[in-house]
Image 1 (spheres, rainbow, N blue to C red):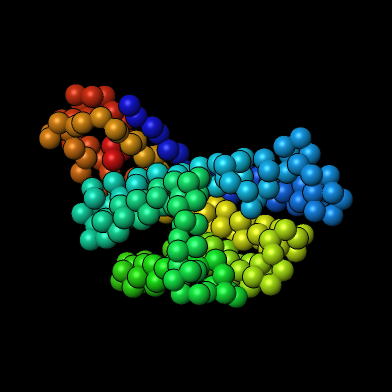
Image 2 (image 1 turned 60 degrees about the vertical axis):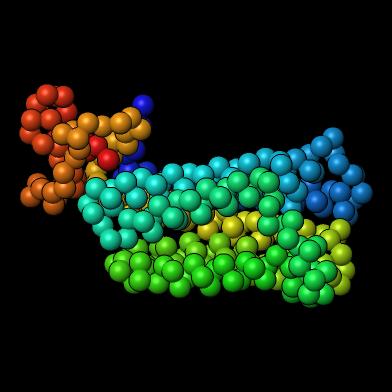
Length: 275
């Protein structure tokens, strides 16, 4: 079973634009539903409000956000495969990042982190910005992530530093930053107001935009290293493993070339790489 990923500058930008359009559409639909329910008193609108509300669980925006995270996890895994082939010292970091993104994708649907709110709130008597008490272990995990990935981050070139830092900053601004704001508001006025719905909308939009930017960054990162990537999920014989070469003088952008005997036996062209 094989999947071919073609990434170019134009397609990466188009993917980002389309993702942002979908995110904006979901935000508008969510706000319209919340306005209708909380201001006009129209209730659930035959299920429209809970199905498109960004602050609700197990609905269309939730599944879309989970798919975004899963897509980013897959791309990080592809980068890991590339890095392993190149014997990159940070290959494991890409694998761990893929695992983290996959876990967050599951958490998006299962709301695992929200199960920590009441136990921590009762244990520490939290309120205000810590009303949603899961943010306390969340802060610790973010700090640990930054420490663990510091060398990895500084080893990146300037362009990738900017893109990955932007993606992470946007996501954390939504996931933690706006959760502080929402907690402070909800602890005083409750969560059944249009203002809180707007805070939650900004939070979820920032998270999704952060992941969309990460997907763009990963696609661009792969494009910068490979023109075409073939990801094989089948076992490969030892003599069929790819070898690494620098980009050709013709500038085809490919970093990988199969051994000549393997190429002749399989009929693969030099422009396609097995990762």
